[in-house]
Structures are given as C-alpha cells and as structure tokens.
Length: 210
View 1 (cartoon, rainbow, N blue to C red):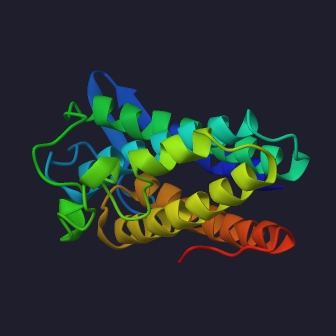
View 2 (view 1 turned 180 degrees about the horizontal axis):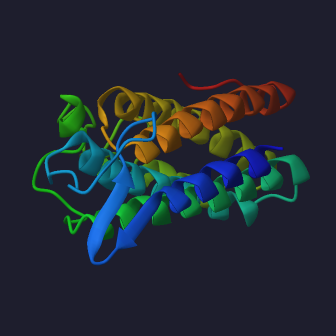
C-alpha cells in the first residue's frame, strides 16, 4: 500500500510540471492556479529541492547497504521501498531545478531557506539534521545480520525525523503547489515508516536513538 501511495504522489507531481512553447509552466498553489515565473535561486522552493535531493541520496545509499548485510525480509522490504521511493523523488527534485534553470548547488548553507543555516553540524558528512555521519555509514558497512538491521533502523529513524522537519518547512514556505503537495506526501509516508521502524526495533530489543 505504501508503494502505491507514493507512486500516486510521483505521478501527480510529474504531470503537474509542463514545458509549453519553451516556457516553464507549473502549479503554484493547491487551488490549481498556474504561473510562468520559475522560483528564484534563493527561494524556499529551490532550497528545498536542493537540500532534500542530498538528504534523499544518503537514505538511498544507506538502504542499499543494509540489503547486502541482512537476509531479514521485513528489513529488506522496507529498505527497498525507501530506496525506490526516495530515488524517484530525488529525480523529480533535480528535474525541477533543471526546468527552473537553477543551480543544483548553492553557496548558502544547507537549510538557509528555512532560516536554519548551519543547523547541521557539517562535521564528518552530516550536512543537515538527521543525516548520518561518514563514520556512522562506515560503521554500518562493517556490521551483519541483526546488528546491521538495528543500526540501519536507528539511523533511518533519525534520517526520517530530519526529513519530515524539512518537508514540513516546504509545506509552510514553498510557493509551487505541486512541490508542496509532494512535501506533504513525504511527511505522511515518512511518519508512517517511522512507526514501522519503531516496531521493527522493538522486535529486536532496541529503540530509536532520538
């Protein structure tokens, strides 16, 4: 059911971004209004697209790592769903930046568009809240079986918590309607997965780190 719901968000978002006679056309409000001016490079829309693409990339990497470290079908299924969903959403976010002819990187700190520039420590690869450090990713690669499952689930719970916070920021600040709708879908899907992750951790005698 989770994959079907996410697929609906992806299809709806993709259908809402059009290029007509060389002019970018996109939904700018949930009420169905449209406009032809792309967001500015320093807008919340562009900031969210850039930052969430980076955030999603780590989740995809983490999920493929754990699929090679465990034979547990529940964890492997969750990891596959997360990897596929977030890879698709990442492609959409980058595609929008291309349509808007905006850079995919910025000199501004991550989450500056939320008024929270510098909230991620930036140390050891943790660019935004919820992201794992390079050391944590390396440690995950060195585990197997139940230990790998627990560590992955704990890291992904924290990752989702940070992702939900960012998506809620877009719902409040982004002006492109289709992007806000995608952000709402992210909040709903990741909060649902956080409950599942908590259950999987409890089965293994563990709990989220935060």
